[in-house]
Structure formats: C-alpha cells, structure tokens
Image: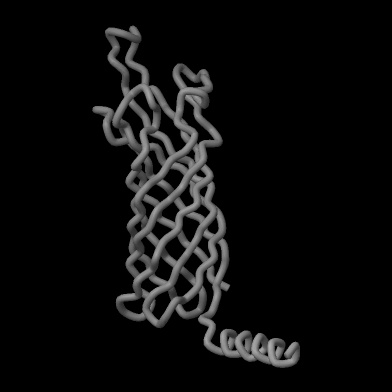
Length: 192
C-alpha cells in the first residue's frame, strides 16, 4: 500500500512539473509621478520606484505577477497665503512599500494589459515647509489600497518596459475625507 501511495505521489509530481508553466523573477526600477485626488491645486511629486517581481504563466496568454516595490509618492500644494502669510509650496513626502498583484493579459506577442490591486504600507510621512521637515506619520493612514492598470511589453531576451497607473481606494488621511493617492509609474525590468 505504501508503494502504491508513493508511486502515485511521484507520478502526480512528475506530471505536474511536466505541465508547469515557467516562473520568472527579476528587478524593476523607474520613475513615479504621484499626486492626490481631492485637493484643489495639488501638483505632482516625481520620485523613484524600485524593487523585485516574480511571475508565473497560467497559460499562453495570461500570467500572474507579484511585486515588492519601494515607491516615493507624495504631492505639492500652495496653501492659502492669507492663512500661512507667505507664498510657499508645501511638499508632502509619502513613501510606501507596495505589493501589487496583477494579472497580465497578453494581446500580441509580448504586449500585455495589466489589471490588479496594490497593497501599500507607509514608511515615510513628512510635510516639508520652509526647508523644515515635520513628521506626519501619525496623521497619515498607514495602509494604502489601490486599483492598478497598466500596459507593458515583455521582450524575449528578458527586458520589460512597463507603464502603470494606480488609483487610490483608501483615504490618505482619515480626517481630510476623500483624498486618495494617484500615481503613474514608468519602469524597466529584467526577467530571469
């Protein structure tokens, strides 16, 4: 009986590995252009996004990808000079460790459409005014959930060029109301 069970397990593992689609992994890095939705006059903060990814083909035209990325988000705004007394620009630095999980739908060769969700954790929350940093980490929502959509091209030799837009679903700060993150990421990666 033990030999029969062992033989069955070995056959199942062998057949699964014969039909297994390839795994891929590698680094990614690029630029992120972020702002917020819900604050009039907010402008873009340009930062860096970098990390690693792992993906697996489900069939010939769909794959699933998970990333672990450090992203320098935030925004700039000019507060009302009647309140603050000068014409300064207030800068918010909201840096996250993000984990996007996307399905990649291959349209033609390496061209793919990406849809999914991103889960983020705040690691830096600062307000910069008059060259002085003020920690805002306690006031900012520590968790960020976003909808992810994107377009990418995976070259046969390993290069990946990708553009994604993230639309925030959770509020940046609980007391402000419906202010959410939004960012455009342009990255290059290498698939091993």
